[in-house]
Length: 614
Image 1 (cartoon, helix red, strand yellow):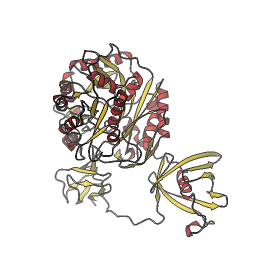
Image 2 (cartoon, rainbow, N blue to C red):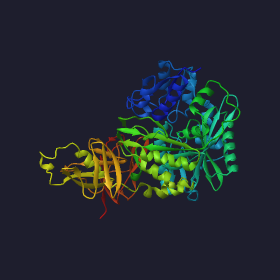
Image 3 (cartoon, rainbow, N blue to C red):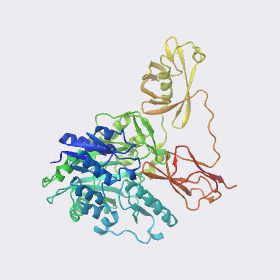
Image 4 (spheres, helix red, strand yellow):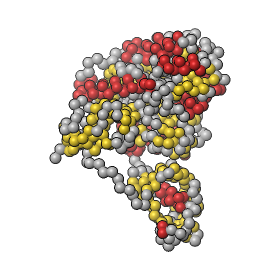
């Protein structure tokens, strides 16, 4: 029996595994980088071991350090979670060679399936070797790992070499393996997968289907189980193919077989030899704890011949610290508060007051709803997200709510191109026009009506806020009856709650303030000074870092004086395990180049200047 288990991962998955271990009576050991010293996963574990450094390559990708940590802490098993080393056969062997129990498939199965190129060959699918114009569009993919990293769509043959190089660099950074391959890119398809679970006695379960079609940058955003709209024969075919893949490599434990479904046909993509981020929707529908089952299988227990029956429908949304309206730019900073209604499940690696850094994936949490029907599950999840309290950096919360309520998604007509078609409408600003007034009234609560030149009772008080990229000015007055504003009846106002009556309809606003950042309900505002300080002026064509990160690559032969074309990629910035292109805003000449490979930059740092051709 396993009594102590090291979790070779971080964030929400480490917290989620620790929760199951606690229920099973198993002590947990966390590992953490220096950047994660105070992270939630390191706090909830019974024991925590430091991995010196902050970059993944120096910490969470160092299998030798993790095995040493397990032995030092007295663990007798290792669970890899997902990502990092979860699909690394050498790490699995190192764990076993150290006399520890490996919570995962045999190393031989990982080798056969963790490399997408070998997995395709095993399933009779060949990757593209020599790409021609007739093959376009194609998809460049990392052979190891997942999560959309090391993946690029190529529509022009001239872009292929550059995208291959970028994919290799990103894959090496995220997985420690730079191997990539090319396959046809099927547009208009749905991403459907099958959860499998196998024991050491020959039993293999196919635990239904999941639809993961809503993706950004080839990384899943909303997932659900079962996949809607599939015919009975197609579902049976998907189950049979998934079981076939598992049996082909004598699989053990939890895994996922992924397909692209188009025109009623299933195209094998890959098998992920690990637990997936979206596993909670399967757990909700089948009433199982997949982590607990992984542990029982590793202890040698036998699965029943048949899996439990599916019940109802479940939907999961990934809450990211990112701005979808700004090319999904990841966000950093202090997460002041995160709370969702009890009607849904919340898996998170953060708690109030934690900092969101630049080193790791920007996912804050997974929010999961389960209900008897798909329509009810969608409604429950959208409502919970809409009412969630999220104070801190910009998130994709509004995008998630609008996606779940979008007609195309509600009618299960979505595919992997959903965001390509609908992103502008899903990210269009829709701020509450009364939020700035509520913020001003809350701020004014308790202030003296007199005693300062700004508080002359007969004159309106003026406050300015930035909201949804625009500046808003509000005016209110101190009267004998309290605070007043034109056209609005102020029913109640204090530092934390404002109630306004607008045309007979009462609007309730809970207000929280963190320095100059003000959260009014679900609306975030920034209080602006009465007399703005002078701002730094940048020359036209200046390229500023959209986020803090590391300059990982400069375009070949790019120097000051080099000619460039509008849209040409000039350099690559890595933040939160993803690479982001910095492109020329106009056709012209590079008049200044400040960025260098390996350079750490802050948001707003001047990287280069492109002077437009007259």
